[in-house]
Image 1 (cartoon, rainbow, N blue to C red):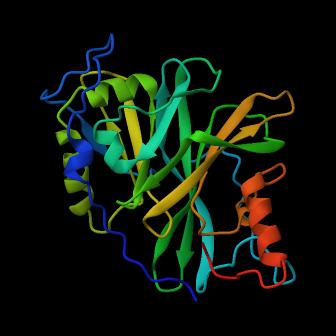
Image 2 (tube, helix red, strand yellow; image 1 turned 135 degrees about the vertical axis):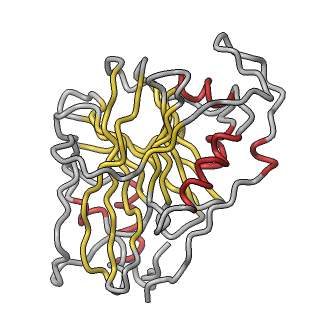
Length: 275
């Protein structure tokens, strides 16, 4: 049976308090107001680079995860273009976005530019929708294999996560966290709580961040790197355990974590409950 959970975003004050980190060359100082603009997300933009090709469930196929009850469709939604000035990415919980200190950036080895972030939304008969996958596509070449990134995987107790550049994290950490509270207020004022939000740091163009709801809510979510035939990173994908990996239509062999989960379920006495 599909779990019924209402997403409640909670930002813990203890997480957002400044830590005793040494300021970086970009000036991480506490107590400063950071101007930010909240933009609607997802956008209606089409033709965005993505490696998602969502497929319908095949009743003859046994998937690595249960197909949730009441699933009616899955579709791609453009969350916005993330600025990566040096190609270095950080991923964390929504709460950690307020003061993203201590995160480990991963060098995607791509030129400084804006790169599209795409959600794969699972929609249900009762009108519910969930973010099943998040993808940052940085090259058009399709991934042929996937490797898990410990640095980009994250846990959340607020039901959300975020993608941000290393430079954006330095700027975000220099404020007093109010920009994050403002983004939550913005989301609450919408007719329906949005699955994602694009936040632009208006005093530091083009730096921004994409914040998104995570699957069924709280938990730990793996982020994997898609490597093309030449071994270059072509995509970053966060997997939220809502839909089976194969229903996303992502190219290449599934990541080892998915294969391990499939093997566990096929073993005698293996659990069939969603993680």
